[in-house]
Amino acid sequence: MRETLTVRLDPEQAEWLEQTAQRTGRSVAAIVREQIDRARRAPAERRFMRLAGAVSLDRGASKRKGFATK
Image 1 (spheres, rainbow, N blue to C red):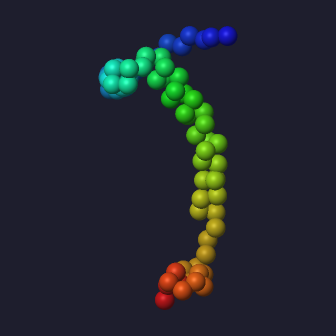
Image 2: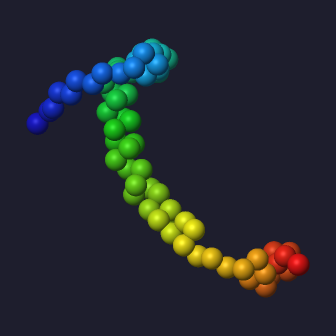
Image 3: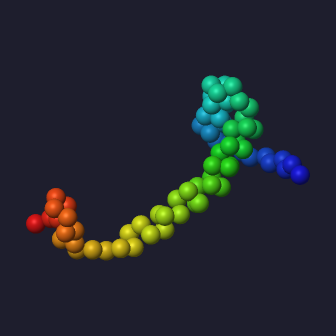
């Protein structure tokens, strides 16, 4: 089933969308669908980021030569 969505864009967004459509030779609708799909995939692609900042080590934790700070 197809859905129709009406969205109000600010002038900068509308200009970007029109320019991108002209530059790429694709329809505005195709670009919007692509961006929605990209947004849907983003959390799965960045799942590893949930651990960012979760580990805290002191500055001298690395034992490999060249990585330890003095």
